[in-house]
Image 1: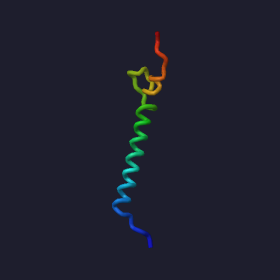
Image 2: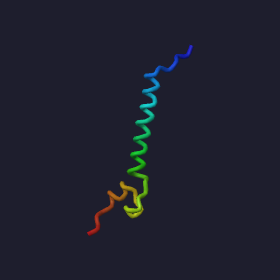
Image 3: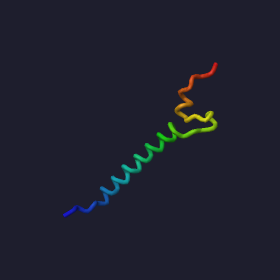
Image 4: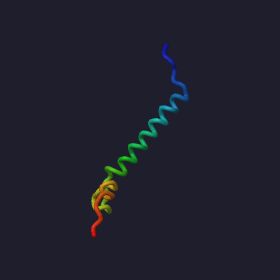
Length: 53
């Protein structure tokens, strides 16, 4: 007989999904999102550019 999922195991599953979704979004926001104010670069690309003197 198959065991029924408990409320706790379901909550753990959804918490893990939420956490992974947040990690994925933060990575996208910092590394893939193009920002026109940053000359069309992502924030990570902009931060790694050498400073103009």
